[in-house]
Length: 428
Image (cartoon, rainbow, N blue to C red):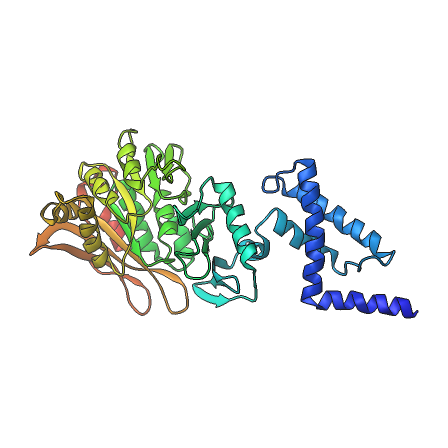
């Protein structure tokens, strides 16, 4: 009876003592890794096999506990889940990756792991070691085919589940490597879904869908995490199936249904210092692929010049840009092409922006963390004293996104595809 009580007390302490539980998980983790290597299992592509090995390891551990050599596993399912996450998943981050409410995860240092839920961020109770963070980075990049080292201290990559990874190596980031995982949550795939989520009104959604069908060029602007990529996906879902789409992105983030679509992404410099494929290269290459539409995931630099040249030639397209308002988005798009070289000047770029961009949609996050369309403006194509003229189409007040009375450019394009834009804006 005394021996039983002692064992029972030890089991109870294992369940409540984080250190003892961690030691137990590490023991079983080590055994599972040995079996993984022995059987030639690929953990990331064979998670079911890893779970089987974890279940066997826990069962064998429990059998040994009957002899008193080791402590009993009090919560087998919890231990199995943690071991599978460590071996086949992304360790302590796996629960956040599987939580649908978590939109983003970032690590400032091993003892500071943050998550974002519904636009609000919070410090979690998860505490990692420096070695665990480095192992996570290595495992995440292994599946992406991208690398990080002192010669290439930052990296953008796509995880197997579609989430976007960004890493800044220690030395550039003070003290520790900084990790950011932006989850790709498919809460909306069409403009109608955004209406249901309260981001958009039915009338504005109908107008934007009509604008896409009519072949107007649309610029989506907003701050980080305001939903630009999701909105771009929803717009792209309205492109007619008869069109051929070519998209260019830093990493593959766009996901929308279309029968004729070629997606391109950039590539890092190789170990020899060659082989880099930039976003500007992709925009140029896309024009050689007979597109009916081009989509640029986000313009940040000189690739904006090539995109403007393409749009200015009559090829419909859309893209995103970081900006605080629709007006700021046009100003920024007028400045970015100047990075392409000294022979590019504002006297050419500003008129090119005015004649190439037709609609600007600005997104924001309200005080409750909800992503909403803040304004939709039309670009008339006119310039007054160096300023591109715009006309407000929809503006958000304290209640909702209201029609502001403006009209889009190129009414003939709407008529060409059988759309009465006046009726659309009137809500008929």
